[in-house]
Image (cartoon, rainbow, N blue to C red; front, side, top):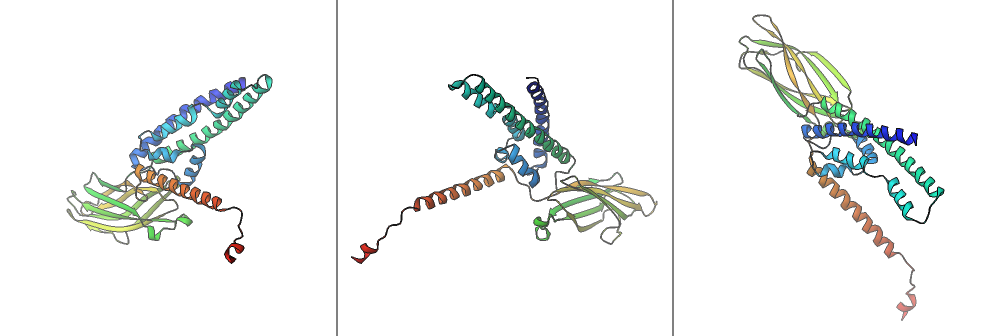
Length: 306
């Protein structure tokens, strides 16, 4: 009894933690504008501990993950159903009670393990998503009057998913919109993070081999590429510019922008679930027809001879 009480207490604490994490995930799904916020490995794990999570996301609710957690970890367990059946049946006495207690303990411990795994997975993913850009473009003007706009996209023909190699192109437009003196870009600094939390810093002189000088009202645009070992990531940083009259050093910020594939919404996931269901039904029908076709072979030789 004491062990079960401790298990229930731990379960309640985990349940409250799960609700907090699930709400954070729901918020990030809305912020990022896509339901594809989990890497493939985490998707596989979620299918084990939260069956039906894909279908729940396909509904398109703003609280999809929170609702799924409530259904999965708050409602009665299989052990409770079994215990009800034991009490309804003719089986009684110490044997029935012992079987009921054993199954309840086994089920509770199994769900406790699932709750721990779900809480760790959802919490970690929420933290990473909160630290990543949601949009594939950014537009920031520094206090010195230099504007930097960026747009990024996945390059499918240069990416090899089987080898975890993904290439993203990004186009940067730098414009002197309000600085009265010419400014020269002398260096760059990028911070790149993938969806697994791996971070890389890149520093270099100029941009694509140039150190352009921008008069007021002029701009410079270039395109470069960033490789990642994951399908999604985030990138941002700054440029160092120098005023050509005053010699003043300026830090020109680059707003964070997302690196990732085209976004998918709830409708896309719903279509995917429908297609998977249709394929499963077709496989079942084919198996059924094949089974019906099997039977005793009939020798029609004599009949044909007539």
